[in-house]
Image 1: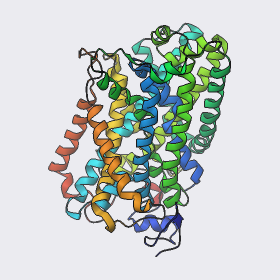
Image 2: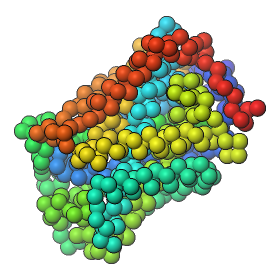
Image 3: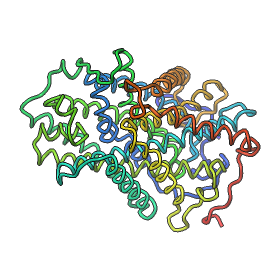
Image 4: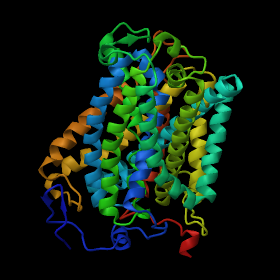
Length: 511
């Protein structure tokens, strides 16, 4: 069934069109269970909120200041944003063809050769789960760090690793409760979050541009290189510094995971992915320029007692009262971001367990009859994120490791379907949103970029390497990969997605 849908000037001539969202979902092998109440804007809002330039850019700003400094912060953002757009375009094309909350692992299953399809899907799903959990941990841990900085400034709250972890746990509990009992509120807050981010960036950058009497020069912002890592190679440090930008550009697969709750999913989902990337690219560049130009004393802000240089920049440039007020704007954005991340993470867990791929899957894919949301999956997402952040109690570089895990896990899952789509060539049946003749070129660039960053972010970030500076990202990735491989060989290869898919146990709302 076809229609004359047109995207980016490309006339579509094949693909299943003219179907309702529910009919297309049934065609893919799933029954509509989740409530389909999201608009295209709401779908975009979830991904834009999870990318959250006020979260990713600012929570890793300290990392950027020590790993390359202003030059890498500025130019790294430009380069990484462009490469991320390639990755997102490739994902969006596949999302249009397969609009289901299963997302990446389902795409891999449909695109891989039949004999190995289940294996490709299995490992894609596990990398996606790892990345989603790490992103949730990174976002809410960053929010806890900034909240600790605010409490330190306002109430002389002593910031310690133990107290930061307690704030982290409290924020995760808050987001779990909102996703459990405030489903409609969460949808509304995701829409509000877009404007909070846009207006927040505008207000903060405007204040940093016009209030301070002193600004750094363009030479400082675009060329100053700083290396506080202990490594002697400038090139290596520049590459490590890309983590700040690449970590920010994560989580936009949320638009795919929310397609079963979105109207016109085959076009709204892919548009949500791409739009969230390019709007964040612009907003983040403006935000980073605003903060970097407004640095008053690099050394003082680098060693701020708050533990958050952006907070110190606001205070030094704008004064205590205005600085604290704008710090609250940043914290609010980070809380929005973490809430949306728990939402998207829970949908991934729900979908993966629906196909029996997680231990105790019958628990995790149950849906609340009252809210029609996967409540058990919400709390698994929150608890797993908490566990990933606990090493901070003994490892001072644990936060950077969590962000590395997020990038590695998610981007491997992002690019596997693209790699399989390239191998499939003309046999790939496009959806109504596609890249036309550019699909292959964009896909190859995406695959090469992800291979490079996967290797890069597993490498040591600080020298000398000790128990307190060890990058435990490779350990976390290997543990999850080893568990998934063992389970696959021992059992899952006999039943996971056998036939079209494994039949899940019925949900309460299906009875």
